[in-house]
Length: 569
Ligand SMILES: Cc1cc2nc3c(=O)[nH]c(=O)nc-3n(C[C@H](O)[C@H](O)[C@H](O)COP(=O)(O)OP(=O)(O)OC[C@H]3O[C@@H](n4cnc5c(N)ncnc54)[C@H](O)[C@@H]3O)c2cc1C
Image 1 (spheres, helix red, strand yellow):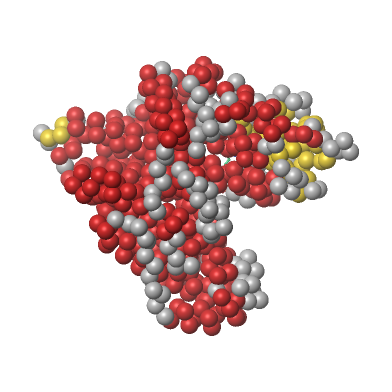
Image 2 (cartoon, protein in one colour; image 1 turned 90 degrees about the vertical axis):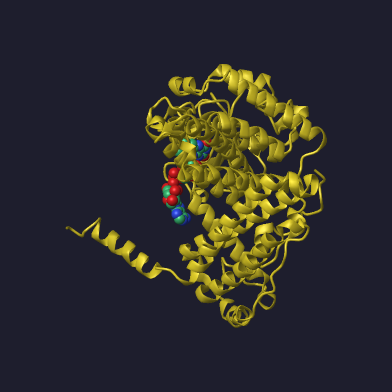
């Protein structure tokens, strides 16, 4: 993919909150080319072959580990260092290439996808993004080859979503080394080899590379509902000495390194889940075309067919969104944090709903413990929770969008959502004036003419999102930070618009390349997805005005005060 000078541009989604459709960031749809495409195809095929012929997910669950033999085999196939530079023994794939191969893991087994995701997406990634040449030289070759496994060590007993407030301490010694004390929990590969540990120091947050087996590290395994082949650990650090040269970045960079790693890592969750959804669809088709009831195949019933169509459509949309986002990274767009967060939320929610539908279509069959969907139920439930709980991601998306909007207003440039109190008085008259006017809808440029109706819908919704954002700023001022029901709706609207943009961008490329007749089936799926998302956006924006929030909040407070349900029959 050609690198374009997009580094200075605001993110696509922040622009959406301003009522702008930054077409140059999303059109044409990103397509891998040259060696990157060839290598991706080769590695994806190797992964699929290995995963279907050799790897046994049931054995992983039974043994409570995916197996050292599996890691060795994946290393030999070049699948444990997919984005690591070739000079360190990796495959040097682009973000799109990496995520495409991760889709194969998700299609085969949620557990192996997580083990590989922990090792690569968040474990090796901090070194890849922030390591010096010496640090990369020292650790990446073993990680790329799968001889060693990496861990991302952030979560603590008192620190989950609120990662900034971590309690693990790193004290700098006079020789520049560090002494680490604290307890981390729920760490994948926490008992393994190369740990990026986040801690607080007098100089700010730090990220330290700690080698497994360093004196003072103790680990203890958790027993989990699903992902039973993922070795989830409590890791205790007692006076662990870490050499000066193991510091990633500078003192004070630790939190930024953690957040940027997660921003980058969330994308492979999107593609792993779309891989999983393809498997759920395959299993559902197989079952509903062979199982007969009422003298018919199940799929002959409309309510069954509807679930199959829903899955096909949602996979298409999620895939479009995921690879548009990876394409932003490959095109050199600097800020993709909101797109990555929205993709994570959409993937983990939709993946769960798809699994639920597939489960329903299987009737009692999937409830038997040895069925792959039973295992998927255990494995997939964590996705809306980890790597950024979905509601936290929604708040993150909306507040960043609102912050961009408040900074954009021309006569009140110094407003920020994090400190709007002094400026909100200035903001109010301006916003009132603007909200009163109708914003001219901005159109997605470069879409195929056969998608004109969807382009019109996107323009209309984007203008409404901008208006709703301005209205919320005017109404709530700095209190917008507490208004999570407003944030949720704005975030859902932004994600729905982004999903439609991704789908229109993708299908436009297909129509251009293959023509209308050859692309008819795909176009129908794309249109169906856009229509479903347009309804989501419409509902989200409408419910900003018409809702039961007052009652809902009163009921929440009352229930809390009552300590439970109190209406006896
Ligand atoms: C299987 C598994 C693997 C994991 N792997 C790793 C790993 O390798 N490395 C690592 O560092 N961590 C890992 N974790 C930890 C994981 O990242 C955390 O569980 C996650 O960040 C959420 O933190 P928490 O569970 O403490 O939930 P909390 O932060 O306590 O939140 C609980 C719930 O409260 C709500 N909530 C919280 N804050 C807000 C808010 N501001 N607004 C609205 N709602 C809110 C959300 O619904 C959230 O789901 C793993 C966890 C599990 C279970």
